Image (cartoon, rainbow, N blue to C red):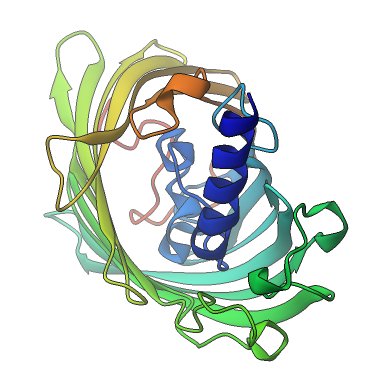
Length: 325
């Protein structure tokens, strides 16, 4: 048990310096009908007020494993513009970060008849990051952590989204500014380049009986060290005549230099009933920690209000994929 605890401590300490650098871990939150998680361009893309709350517990069974809570809300403020906000708290071992993002997006009609639209978005980010050195053991000076390691940083995300009928492509640059690391100068592996690029694309295929399937992919590249990963996703939705639906799906994540060695793999499901939304996903872990945990669990609950607040064809409403009743 001591060996397991030591491995966990070292693993969590090292990964915290990379995974928490103003980059809130993205698992399957965006697949819970909330792509606003990964791109500011989705702010106000619907014709309603959309709220989503996520609770994520990673590597269940490992002490001090990552744990994340977040809330996202976005809505229209004009016929072709939208705003959004998100708030999060993320704990990883003995490190913790919390913050908020405030977003504006504008949506343009490129061609009315072929349903082509272009969206631009920007987010202003506020983040606080700290290491709880009182809980570190051992406190060897070689760790370079001997005083309070708390810092606050501001940053920006920018992106664009292109939609053509049932096809979509989102390109996003997150944390485009460098990070203030003055208080972390003794921490040898602390990076100051936080920029990461994200590409999200997919296509919705309508099938019989008011149902559809949606294959999609999410690519993320970290400029600091060249790491990159890809999610391959699949979803099936089934609608009723009240614009309600349920869905099931699966997600497969891998490092791009290890395509056949998955990091995470797992099922998802959810439903929308009236204004209420619920989603759940489970991911099995396939790295060195797989033997010591039972996987990652995520729950999403949400509310959709004020349906029809915009009549612009660039909106993405409940029946945005073309089902008419």
